[in-house]
Image (cartoon, rainbow, N blue to C red; front, side, top):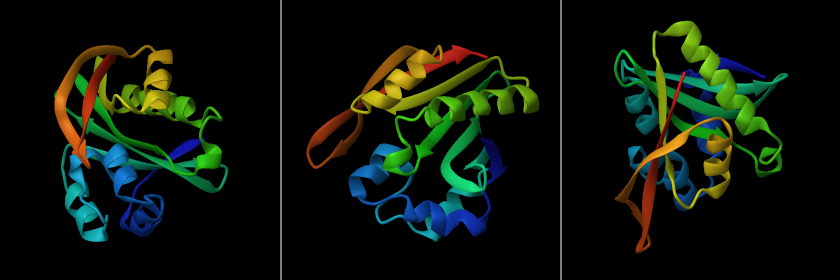
Length: 159
């Protein structure tokens, strides 16, 4: 598994991985509206504090991750995705996070890594906890989908 820089050539691939409005919110949070399009991605990718990657297994793209520099001490993991259902539950998420932690160690002076995950995303919560992330807070009014509140769990760990 390796990380390769996310470029405009990958925009349509990423869009193809987001099947519906609910998944768009679960994966992307409020950053992207549905339907996801290249213009939204291009605007978001213009952030100077953002580095994005496509996750490759051999020669096959299987996912996506963003690293956002919050400050000199903290990098935030965002929009973590193992794209295909068949690939989920196979350990790719864990390997992806480990790879991102190495990337952060190698390219920054950060001491902490943070992330946010919707409380309903049980598989992701378990993955992050298994990698040493602990709950630091809960945002009750983070998002809403079709009248259902989606609290956001804030997690962090030392690098």
